[in-house]
Image (cartoon, one colour):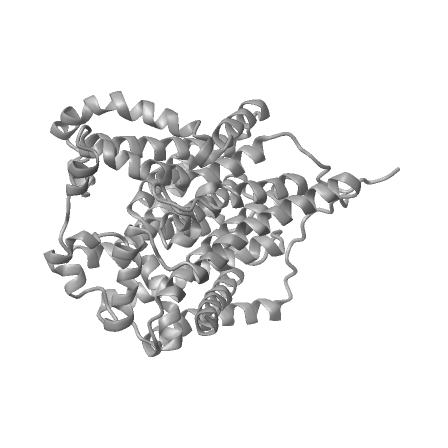
Length: 479
């Protein structure tokens, strides 16, 4: 247990330190608070470390302690030089506007909400140390690929190229297996619990980013409410059984994708409001992280372009092309070029976007649309999340950046609906467990909750940004 915990904390600390360095070098501190900087440091650190490992694999260099160390040093060294030069120039960072301190009931409400958020995160952080991996997809895909990396130093081997391993989904993006391999690289030994234990930290990063962005752009009470709301979502913190998720401790890709999507969406809000330098670049990097995490992250690139076209004040086409192009370029270089060597399966949805597949699948809307509507009101999985968020958005009269990001959310949901319409997915288990329904209906039951999870944290934060102010944002001037 002690060795496992040390491996997890060592990997997380390494990624966070690198992410903080990259964050401060590329985007500076700006007006962001400690919580938001910590959350983005974690996400950027996971992203950069995973991308360096992916690049080594794509180039055929192999992933080892020596090669990964040199790769990370190649990133850290120029970032350190940028920071050193910036300190020498003594350019002060902008400070956030002053706030009236919370007091009385408001202060206790904030403390209570933050304590609830911390307790909600404590469960997934500790569950991985107590419970062995149990999710089927985790054991047969995400953790198995990390194990292959730990022993072989590459995914470009039999596990990915031999059709006998087709059940591992060989073209799934591999950012997370590379990140979860970091404890093995540091310790020199494979530990399944340590690999699993990295995943809940994406939930920590998600909550920190949500809290920090709301504290900066809204008010302290809305920030605390957002942290507690996101941290306690059943599919994030505690849902203990499949389907649909099993929480952040299940070593699945859905919570990490939700973290990248929420952070990228908030960076786009900053970019549309032009309150931070290079927020567009930050959004593009985080969108690349989403695409490299799971196939469902790819439509977010088109959604981001749409949000910029709808919400940007100037240079809309150029900014939309720049953000989506940078994210797509990183995806193509780091994964697509490698994945072309691996067999394509029936989950090649892009290859089925043609008239024949649409005509064959159009009739599925009779059960797809009711299933989507039922998921919105599922109290077991979501409580009142979707209804409450919709009410806040309707009553709050959201500003243009929030409305633009809602277009991203809508396009993402539309892409999921389209994927079910054209899907050619089949499975022997569907014939056994759901003989009266089709394979796609069975797939829908397995995955719909996880698909909603990808967008739920972003929708929660957007709804709170649109909601009425709960506390004065700036300090009183007196007089």
